[in-house]
Image (cartoon, rainbow, N blue to C red; front, side):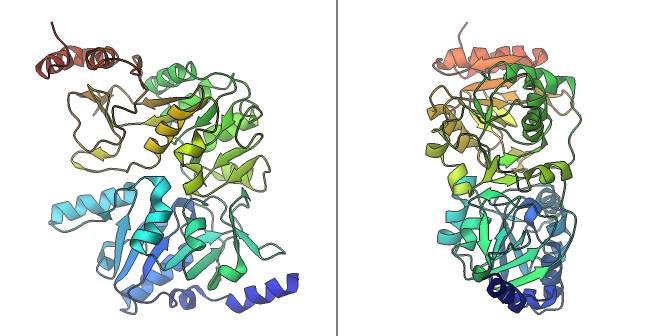
Length: 442
């Protein structure tokens, strides 16, 4: 049977130029997320747009990288390849900033939770094509989505045109993360190093927050962690814990290091015991090598991993997320900064609700007490942007100054607890604002 699959592979093998030509003008195109954005295919599609051979293409995606930024997201192509972002990153922020200065439209943004992305793309938007990077095919005709099962897998199962870029550097993963050659319209071969995310240097505030959060995590708990200095500090502080589990949307170097050191064993998990669960990964080459063919890890679509009902099946589930602002009632804005979209909701609320419904679970939202080099408080009287996590769902808020457990507190008690973990130089101002709002008295 292997020869049958090899023959199908050869029949579908095209140059990047020829494969990009299969994407017609007017297409609604889903692009792989993060690490899975295919360099050769995107460059070829951008060249077609430059030459006037492709136009009116709507491009839907989350978390672009420099690969997309230097090709299909170039601003001079925006009238032919229209970007629709469901999660902003540095590329979109730069485009939006320049667009605002020039008085023109930037990247179109679609608010959504991460878990709903496959449904949104397929049912509401109606994408008809997908381009992404996959691992080499195995003897039975299967590719692996590797670092990015997320929305790529469920979208690939439903759209009529799937074009893949086969990269030997893409790891193979277990779980529900495969794509068969029979589902593919075209194959491009291109070897290129995978995008890596540098680790941020830890500051004293990060380590203080990390230690406080680690103190809230019991041995045997199952974790969800994001990326950045604070999650790295949490992982550093968790090194002495035992039998932790992993059920996370994003797999980064921090949890990988905890698995290497034996702190994460997944042995006491109540869902997928013995397996660390994730939907996408972003890290360094060491992280990707650890994922490759590792039977202790399984990747599943985001519609499963981020489903609050699924998350809640993990006993002692602990979600650890970051925010940009917390108001005096406990509501969090984690996606808006300086009057503009900065990131997106992602899976924060999915995991907050899933962890809250878990037996013995808890959700933790962390932030530095100040921003702008200490000149602005992140705990504020009112949010400057949309509510990402409502006050009704918030459990623990952590800054370098302490932990506020808001569960079961009155509005007055909440405001006092949050003021107590604000930076000292802002506490009097916040107390005055709380009195003006009728949150505290006296």
